[in-house]
Amino acid sequence: DVEVLTLGEALVSLRSSGPLALGGPLTMHLAGAETNVAIGLARLGHRAAWVGRVSDDELGEFVLRQLRAEGVGTDGVRRDPDRPAGLMFLERRTADLSRVQYQRTGSAGSALTCDDVAGPLAAGARVLHLSGITPAVSDSAREATVFAARQAAAAGITVSLDVNYRARLWSRDAARAVLTPLAGYASIVIASVDELDLVAEPGTDEAGVVAELLGRGVQTVLVKLGADGARGYTRDGAQHLAAVPVTAVDTVGAGDAFTAGYLSGHLDGLDLRDRLRRAVALGAFAVTAHGDWEGLPRRDELSLLTGNAAG
Ligand code: CKP
Ligand code: MG
Image 1 (cartoon, helix red, strand yellow):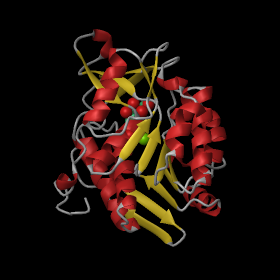
Image 2 (image 1 turned 90 degrees about the horizontal axis):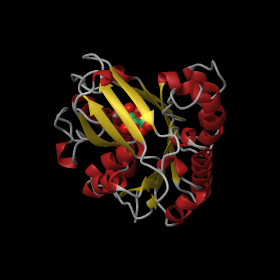
Image 3 (image 1 turned 180 degrees about the vertical axis):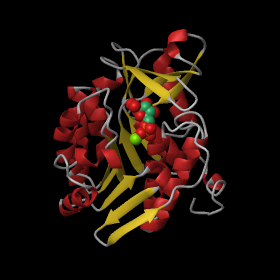
Image 4 (image 1 turned 45 degrees about the vertical axis):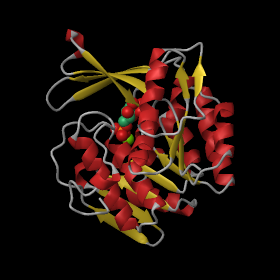
């Protein structure tokens, strides 16, 4: 049986090592916030499954093979015969600046429906992980996300939500109008500092957002601070954990790694401090390696960067 079920759009990411406008070789990778989380969990030995639509061509085949190779459950995945794979281009514009561009409008992944997710949800899971990217990609994907959150909450499945705001997909106001109600189904809400007011009234400060979410029934609020680590809040109080000091080479995927680490700690029954410890450890693995998920640790590698068995 599945421990963590997640749903969303998997992308084919094409990376260039220099400015995209100059052309040159591109390398092909799997990307997508929710598949990143599922892979992070599977590497640590958890049973993780991903639901989504993939194109019925070689690119869809690539996505499925990557997920299977990483041990992520794909039984609920549907092949869409009519729509292409969503693409993401990632260019290294300067030594420290990467830029992302999508071609995902009308993609197979964005055609996700409530019907696609109903079966896998009914089969059950301990945790349903959602991100704020999926409701931004189409009306039907938004409906599927809200449906999944509602069904899971009603069935007693722990719902986790990573705000994951993408300015290229929707405005802050549009995001807030969807994500604030969505957070009401969640037990775990994860956001970076600048995303906090997308799950509350605009302009609310961190303490205000946290109080509002905890008052609405959210159990744990996680605020990601990048190189400054993270804060975790529950009704019992707050904890701050510093980041692992490392040299960052590629920050894309760091948030998803953090989420995978946190959820792993949750599944293992760790306390908040140790869950945060594992979350920042996975974040460190993600930023010190190229690729959105390629550098994530297996369980026996958790202590590589920290010397600490929790991560
Ligand atoms: O917030 P993160 O940097 O962890 O998310 C990265 C992922 O899904 C990346 O894999 C990309 O495909 C995306 O976020 C996206 O749609 O932007
Ligand atoms: Mg993120």
